[in-house]
Amino acid sequence: MASVSPLQLSVFRGDAEGGEMVTYSVPVREGMVVLDAVLWAQANLAPDLAVRWNCKAAKCGSCAAEVNGFPRLLCKSPVADYGEEISVRPMAAFPVVRDLVTDVSWNYEVNQRIAPFTPSEADRDDPRAWRMQQVDVERAIEFRKCIECFLCQDVCHVLRNHGRKDAYFGPRFMVRMASLEMHPKDSLDRRPQLKGEAGVGYCNITKCCQEVCPEHIHITDNAIIPLKERMADEYFDPVRSLLRRLGGR
Image 1 (spheres, rainbow, N blue to C red):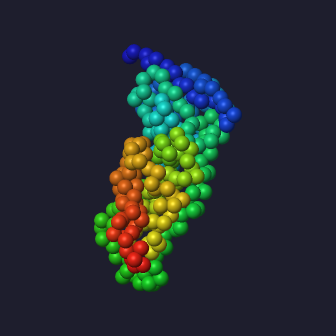
Image 2 (tube, helix red, strand yellow):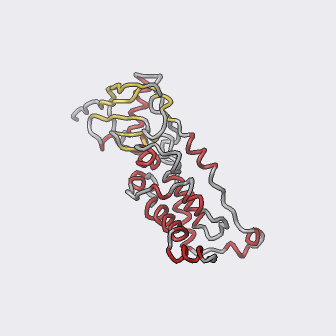
Image 3 (cartoon, rainbow, N blue to C red):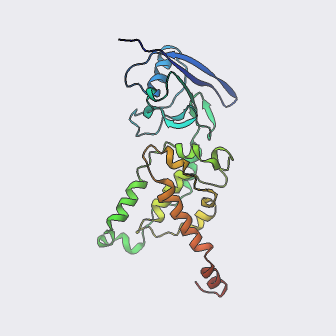
């Protein structure tokens, strides 16, 4: 059987102050994913290489990084898809802690700014009120598939290229707000926050976030666009605007 050439794995080594790409020669085995290659290099060549991972089953989101410049889960990226040379960098949208580990704490701070699911007082004590149409159940299930890998946040040009974390919550939290705003039993009106600090208007629906989602959530089609429509109906509909001027709704 013909021998397989070693993989030339280039990994970012450094911290917030800077760093460089270091190349490791890694033996290839059948079925290997990029995370396997990184862990082999860590175990055999660079014991101080920092990489975040947990389940190795594409369900925890911990091993999010950039493979050949594309945001991916390392455990879901077969080496065979990339050839003999692979580069791995940390997510560009977040501060580097060390090597492939980034500080994603901003996402959890944003999450705290979104009010939780809030049913009405009447619904809370009435079991009959919780009967829902199947279409509403399926929509909620799609949004709840998110594993919070933050790859969608990483690829979002508003956060990645323009650094506007002060103006836009990002696609992951558009999904969370959609799961609440579209829930038939949530009693809060989330449109003011969407228009304001959440910044849904900053998204120009390129669908790049949707393309990188490992759970195949239709982030743009099923979450962001409907949220934009709801916000626009409330604040930019000419009929509603006229009624507001006349003192009515």
